[in-house]
Image (cartoon, rainbow, N blue to C red):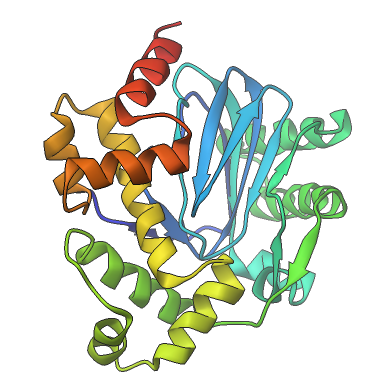
Length: 266
């Protein structure tokens, strides 16, 4: 099983044109923005799955575990913006979360700004970082009014990472909330509060969600049996795996593998 990768970007703004997206579960302190120019991808975030097509933009807030599938052979503008730049927006990125992280129709002027931002990656002229930050602020300022956001309590990013790491490292085990609380020396109430207010779910449902995310990745990338994938992603039996996966994806693991692989070959 691949780990939840904690990415630590050290540059204020990193923007470029990409032909694929990150197909493993990852999290970072920065904001991530993706505008699809051609093709498409699927964004997986907790229990939710979002389809990104040409013209869509997704905005992933800091400290949210996510991954992409069906993201090869596409073309997109990709950008990460660090805490330093985000701090200029007050508490938006520490106390709020989007109800839906996808803008289905990105205004042309914002796409133009994004393209200008990505062109600065190889620019050797003066004040490049300042210009990157300026374009990033313009992009974020234009996107935020297009998102419905909800208030959540500000929570330590370090604690979020500790908890996610714990669940990830024990994904194949049958763990309880009490065990998590004891091992991390954090109260059960606080852990539950983090999941409910920050991820909009319970600890057990989050664990199931990352197991499903990992199973989807293995179904598409690895030629392994369903039994092997079920056990490797933390399910105790193929029967349980089939039931939980079908409830989540609205199709069986076998159907999912066939459908998505056929889509990738087109």
